Image (tube, rainbow, N blue to C red; front, side, top):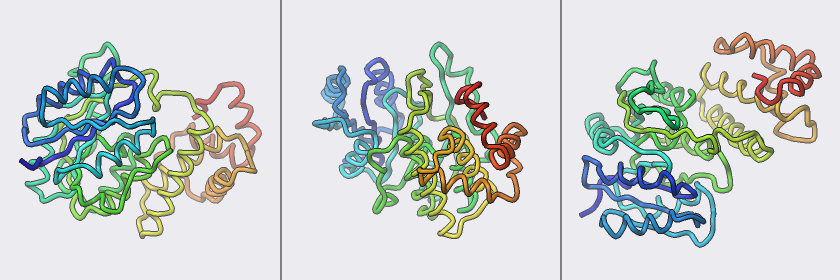
Length: 320
């Protein structure tokens, strides 16, 4: 039987968490799904664990990459091989509610939506799921306009691939950018822009495991700076060229530009730094969402940039 949803799980160095993740997927209340596990040449037992689950559940398909190619390549491989009409993503160290697939699919059917976004929670080691607060506490449930939907993915936590259900056709000309960290920044806005109908479901269906060694909690390296700059600049250029302008877009772009320029430390040989620093200096109206600390940092950057470098040296990278 053709699956309704293909759930894609890239797997790399998550041996300690993978069984919990897969157990939550195998218990889904919507049975007509397939699970596509992509072992990205993980050096631990992840590949073997995937094969063990596939031997027990015929809905599971496993792909073993011959070499580590990264999260985007794993997702793109799975998308090309997916049989479902809809796609969902899960990271191998996270887990999901038993109605993860069913609730999102029913919402899509009820509202004829191409893309559904739902709520989730952060769970840190040693904490109980029930004690966590929803990430999105100000969003109202229901269908949204194109402008509202694009604003929603620009807020903290809205850009992730895994708290959404997508009609597969949205990926016809869109892939995840390979070789980049923070790859969702390079794809989610394109998928959202292409969707003809978008809905938000205010139900917690996903549990994100906050690990101290994950990419989102690791230190700022040059690759982090380079990748985030490339993807954020491209997103801003694309959205503005497509006619989308909003306070949220300006806030997110300037907020990122300030973070980047502080960490890059006046590197005038870097084209990304030049572009983003010019955006900051040409800013005439500070976004209302800027905190007083960020307003002060922006003023210093525009008028006394050497003081930013001094604070950076004294206080470390978490300047703002």
